[in-house]
Length: 273
Image (tube, rainbow, N blue to C red; front, top):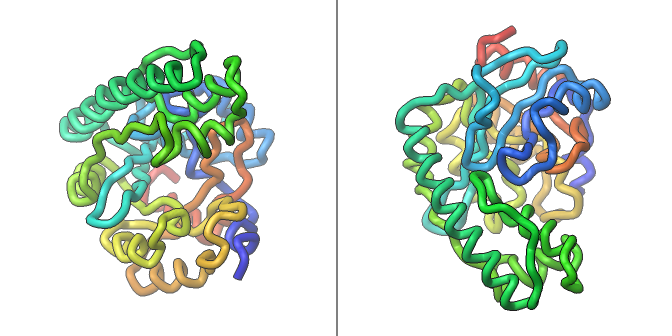
C-alpha cells in the first residue's frame, strides 16, 4: 500500500502542530485563524521537547477553536530514536525538570552547530540562540544567508545526521520519557511510526503507550512500509487510540488528522468534550 493511503482522511482535528516555541513559524495568536481556514475546530500544539509557555491550560478555547496543550518528546531506545506525543499536559515537576534540561542542551548544541556552519560555509547566520531552537531554524537561516544551499540542501548536505556540521544532542531514554509524560499527560502516543529506520520495532514500543499516530502526511517517506493496516491491527490488539496530524512547521495545517470515529474516543480520554 502506498503512502497516499496513509495520508488520505477527512480530519476533524489536527493533533500535531509546531509553533515558534520550537521550530515552527506559527504563533499562538495565529492558530485560530489557520484552524478556521483548514476547517478544523480542534488542534494540538506539540512543540519539540517543550510545552508552549503561552498556553496556560491543558485544554483551552480561542475564538471557538479548541487548543490542546501538548508536547513532542524525542527519546532513545537501544537501536533508534523515537518521538512521543503527549496531550492535555499538566506542568509536573518531573516534566519541567526534564524539559528544562533538554532546552539548555538544545541551546548549547544549537550554538555549537551555528558556529560550525558559519566556519564551514564562511557565512554569518541571522539566528538567535533560544529555547526551542532546532535544526529547521538553522536550515532556514542557511537558506536566507549568502550560502549556496536552500532549506532542503542544508539538511541534506550540511546539518543532517552524519553531515559536516551535525552535532548530536542529549536525549532521554524511552523509559524515562514515557514515565514522565504518562504522569503529566492524559494521552501519550507514538508519533509517525513509518518515519523510523525500523517501523516494526517502533510499533512494539507503541504497545506500551495510550495511542499511536495513524494519520500522518508521510509524502514519499518509507513508501515500502506505509501500510496503515499494520497500525490499525496493533491498535486494536492493544487498545490504543488512533491519533494523527499534519506535523506542520509552517502555516498549512489540517492536511491530515483523525476522522470523527477516531477523534471521539481521544476527546473522551482527555476529558474536555
